[in-house]
Length: 248
Image (cartoon, rainbow, N blue to C red; front, side, top):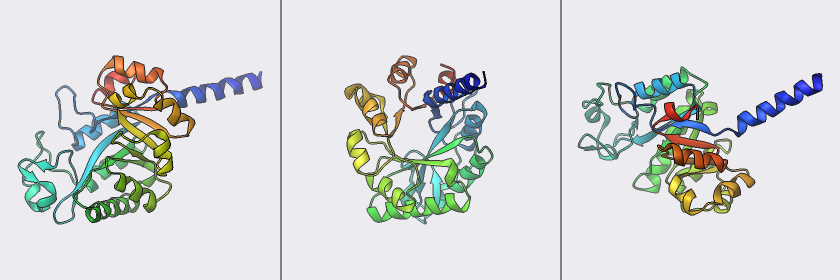
């Protein structure tokens, strides 16, 4: 009987690990009332959902401050060409201060169960990208959040620099043109592609899994698309509707 119970426990653990996990895209911001993407409130909302993780975007200001923002511009100001003191004068649409990465990580640290999916945005030169990686990694390590953080980027250079910084980091590529075999050859941990890429390449999820790679898809806001990807065995889904998909 003990062996039977132990066997059930093992099967249950395997099944849980096999389930498609949910990541909130730029936090959980499509609430009622709605808040602002990449805001501290959106991260707090994601923490309350008890899902796998929350994704957010990191950029660097002209004077080297790391901030959380998806677009190249904050208001009408180009982030990479503007000092932080100017940028912080314009608040987010929900009234919050323009968030620094440090502020965001402080909020993230309040819930160790939620993985922080750090998207480092491409910059104008390799030198700038390398500086952005170095500063981001240092801050995450200084705050002892390296075990709670995973990384994604559209820049192959950024992905490779992250692996150089710490080979233990989980790093996934976003751009969509590399096959699972090419991702493996580059020394990365997975592919995090728009769902249309997997529709065009229906064998890539199974091929990636066979290679031991992480599989993720963005931005899945349709239940039918989610169910199809889940049926193919995808590991993770990044979505604007994490509240709706987490129990599917």
